[in-house]
Length: 96
Image (cartoon, rainbow, N blue to C red; front, top):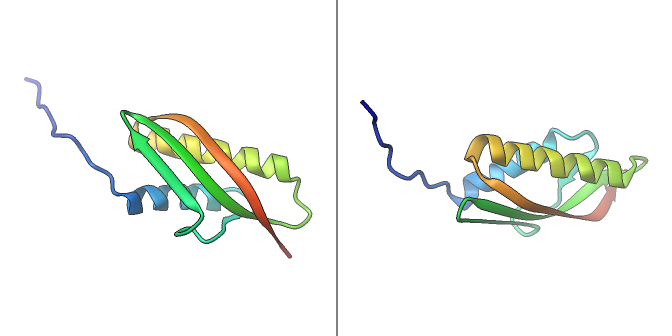
């Protein structure tokens, strides 16, 4: 017997938490002002993220940015079962 589940809706707040926690998993990266500098579009099973970061001084910026992109994509795929079309990263600040 098959049980059909109703559609599950994920709020913007929950999506933001998933993304912020994914970023926190990358050494040397943090989200800069998550309420202002984080945009998540989720439509038709596809996601697109635009995020502004602060990265620790001395880290290789492209390496950290790529790590952030991968962590965010992995988290959204695993937790929300969506295809991630893009994770656009902007480095806005260096942390001492």
